[in-house]
Image 1: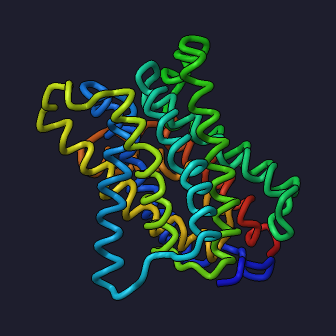
Image 2: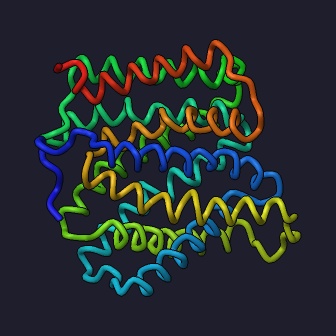
Image 3: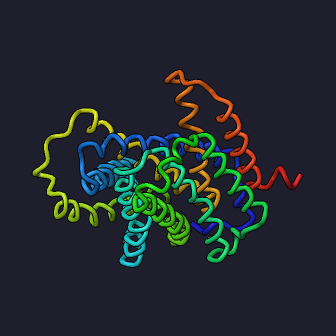
Length: 304
């Protein structure tokens, strides 16, 4: 599979549909992690997450008649991808959420598109930074802050290391998205990359969890914790990464990372539809800002 070129990095309706779906399944990540950290240590959560997800995708690979990636060069690349796209960000965000709220973590994670448009400008030939795109990212980030609410910002200045950890995780996600494009150029399918990445993450994280957390000494977690970890692994990881690499293949890293703007929107919509939460004025303002930011980054409306 060739890396996308400049001619096909515009978001299609199908790509937008996948991006919205990804925002919904990733939207639960911060929620599930906030539940899990109540009883489980960091490396145990992250290692179980990647192990279950890897096993699920391995089963899907076998049932669909696909094969696992092969070759030393490809697996070396997958281990590096696992490090920057799973091991580092998963661990740092869970560690950070021991000290900061899920809302503040989501805001800090929404800096991913900002990092991506800046770095992609220098390391790619077809995702160059423009004034309109940069303005779109800033407007979208402002919209995320407005939707989540200023209360989440009250934690800024407190637990600085935890906040820095989430920002470093966001930077790691940026490199993961950009490096993922290079791996796709090796001819791997989204399912193969997702499965290989999570298998490599399991190989890295399980020994660390055994050494650091000594999970055999832990009490059996409650039902709520177990359900949260299973949902985190199956929905927010296994299924999510199949979507992740499909979007990356068709729309590029910058467009893919817009998902961090849509996650609060999905959470808001689910809260209103399922939990009966009230749509407030700030929500409407935030949605308009995110919509304007996405339109600016997409660029098609401004070209008409």
